[in-house]
Image (cartoon, rainbow, N blue to C red; front, side):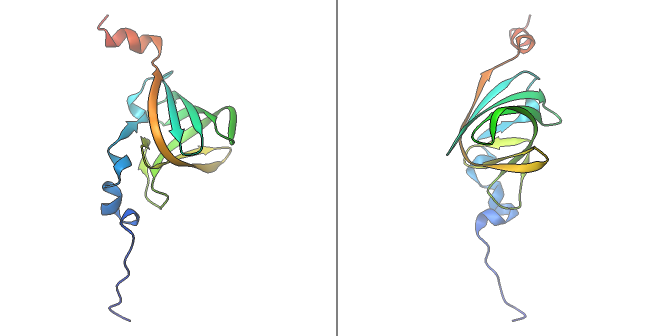
Length: 129
């Protein structure tokens, strides 16, 4: 038993997690200005996230059965339903993890994520004016 090898599924290892599709296809919440609205479609629900503070991962979240009204939350990141978390990330194919109501909330796998709108100031700065 001393040399027993335990095989782990690839998504349960750091190397395997890095190669999960959602680790490349997705977005980092800290790259968005306050007021940016994201629409996240999971297997079971749709969520609307409004960025409050990107670098601190603070958002308003609304959607699904758990968030019938917009509530403040912290987007902890994306996971493959294991113990590894890509912080501040929403990844297609991964689960979104939020901290709200004094507990962690994990969604079903993300199918798509889209930018619904940018705040007015961000729109002006994109055009160079």
